[in-house]
Length: 189
Ligand SMILES: C[S@@+](CC[C@H](N)C(=O)[O-])C[C@H]1O[C@@H](n2cnc3c(N)ncnc32)[C@H](O)[C@@H]1O
Image 1 (cartoon, protein in one colour):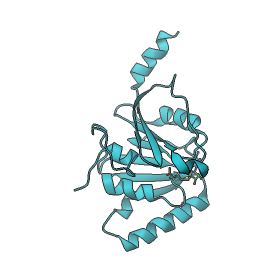
Image 2 (cartoon, rainbow, N blue to C red):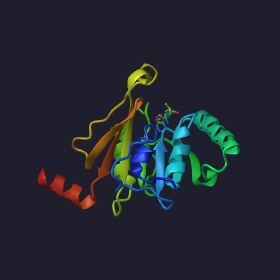
Image 3 (cartoon, rainbow, N blue to C red):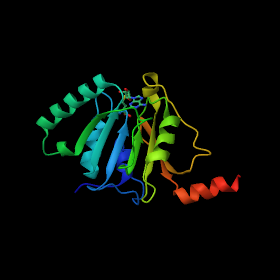
């Protein structure tokens, strides 16, 4: 049986799960900003959630190599994932339209996370729950990937928690509803 919580998506590497109210399922859309040339995460996400997966990358070369990587693994293990549920899109996360997304993952090594968060807040649906998961690297991986963070204070997001594996810290945020966010900004007027 496939486990199906967003915490699997956040931290598939250590297979620890948050209590699962944040559920991805076949009708969910999960976008990963910064799919990269070796997008194993996309395959794990599809496997664990059965959701529709969008892998975004602004670098066409990375995206093409990533597509070949997925196709190669899928020919070896066709039973593990639905290839037709994984789409690779050449786009910058700072200009993409997130209106179809339920869960958005900001990969390691993304430097413009603030602009991406602003774009998510502008375009993501607010009538349903949307979760953003920010990844940071841990341990030895920091020698190869620089950590880029963002300051969530002042943004209409609620921090849910962080899961850690030996290589990743994944912090999940829930977007506040537009009405609540509007109320908060009115309070400062
Ligand atoms: C280190 S790689 C893949 C990381 C990996 N998916 C992870 O989190 O474990 C990061 C990729 O993000 C892409 N990238 C960086 N900034 C981006 C942006 N603003 N929008 C889309 N892709 C971006 C780069 O082109 C690169 O291929």
